[in-house]
Each structure stands twice: as C-alpha cells, then as structure tokens.
Amino acid sequence: MFEPFEYEFFVRGLIAATLVGGLCGMIGVYIVLKRMAYIGHGLSHAVLGGAVVSFVLSINFLVGATIWGFLCAQLITLTAKKQKIAADAAIGVITTASFALGIVLISRYKSFTRDFEAALFGNILGVSGGDLLAIVVVTIATATVLFVAYKHFLFATFDGDVAQFYGVPTGWVETLFSLVLAGTIVVSMQVLGVLLIAGATVIPPIIARMLSDRFQAVLLLSTMLGAACGFVGIYVSYFIDVSSGASVVLVEAALFALVMAYTNLRPRRVPSPLQNAEPVRAGQPNPGESD
Image (cartoon, rainbow, N blue to C red; front, side, top):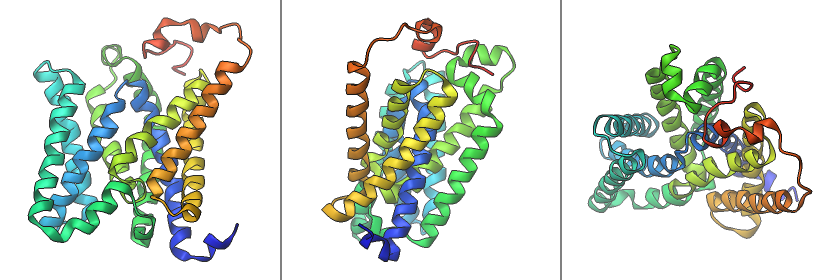
C-alpha cells in the first residue's frame, strides 16, 4: 500500500492532485451556482490555445496561458453583454476558436506534440517542483480572494443585478473571478488535463449541493470532496496505470453515483424553508444565507 510513496515524483503528483482537486472544488461552487458549468470546459480548451502561443513565442507557460485565459473570459463577458448573445453561445464561439488556433499552431510546430498529449489528458510524471509551487501559490491566492471578498462574490453569484443596485462592484467581481478561474485552469492542466478539468470543477459542487442546503457548507464540502477525490484518484492511477486526470474524475463520478443513490433511497425529510425557497432553486440568494 505504501510502495507509491517511495517515489518522489509520485509524492509531488499526489500533493498536486490533492491541492488541484480542492481548488477546482472551491471555484466550482461559484461556477455551478452561476449556472455556467460550460465555462470551465470552454476555458480549459481556450487556455490550451494560450499554452501553445506561449510555447511558440517562448513566453513562460504559466504567465502566458493565464493571461490568455483571462482575456478569453473577459471577451466572453463583453460579447454576451454588448451583442446580446447568450453566454453559452459566446463561450462556444470564443473558446472553440482559441482551441482551434492551438491545434493549428501544434500542426505547424511539431515539437509541441508530446506536451500536447500531456496537456490533454494530464501527466503525473510531469509535475515538477515548479509546478507544485505554482499550484500552492494559486490555491492560497484563490482562497484568500474568496475569503476577503466573500460577501461580494456571494451576492454577485446569486443575483448580479440586485448586487449592482446595492453598490456591489459586480464588474470588478467578475473580472477578479475570471482571473482566478484562469489561474485555476492553468495550474490544473498538468494534473487533470484540458479535457477533464470541467468534470473536476462541476462534480464536487453538485455532490456537495445534494448533501447540504447551506452555501457555506456546500463550499467547504465541495473543497474537501475535491481534495479527497484528487488524492484517491492519483493513488489508484498508480496501480492501474491509467491517466491521472481520468482516474480523478472517475473517482468523483463514482462518488456522485453513490451520493445520488443515497439521497434517493433515504427516507424523505420534511422540506426546510431553504429547500422550498424558489430563489435558491433559481440560483438566487436566500436572505438568511447572505450573512
């Protein structure tokens, strides 16, 4: 059972997967509640384009890909607002174009092919000390931002129009969230891979939402579940010799199935006022939750 821990690369990968899982679970709560699950999938593809551009221009991967992802997120927001295009349509157009640009550059510069496979599916062997440091920095920065601006993010997530009416700087909140999301996706690529980041940002929050009705509890549960699934997924991947990212997401999917079965089979409770409140189901805040 302890054989994998004898290898330094595995320990680095295990720590990275645990942090990335918790990070994706944390940021995923806001994505799910904003009903923008597709943005995690889309931005991960867009960031790949930024990674390839950074490679071609000899720019630091973390810096170049994060800036690219941030600009794509801002472009999506502006397109949806200014052109009266639905957010999902804007995400589809912009992120697909960015991904296509990355594919074109990969086909032109063949030397990126091996890194491309790792970016798509994740590669635990490729997690270096520098990657681990970047993950730690982004995790601490994200947790700090969400803690300091907790009420702003909460209010803007549930009802941006009302939040703006009460003086919440929703524009700055959305900009900051885009930056945090881009950073999360960039540092997650090496562990999870582009194709599987969306699952890691969506499944833990959904599981947490099935287990609790309180926002604070959902946020904490999602973070803990994401971290636990990251740990277990990487550990299992060592023994069955499969992609690290796929293993993490499959563990999350299995947990989702178990929790769904549990919630369907357990005795029905008398619905609480929070469960009955229409604003919660519609993605809007309950007055009792905003504290």
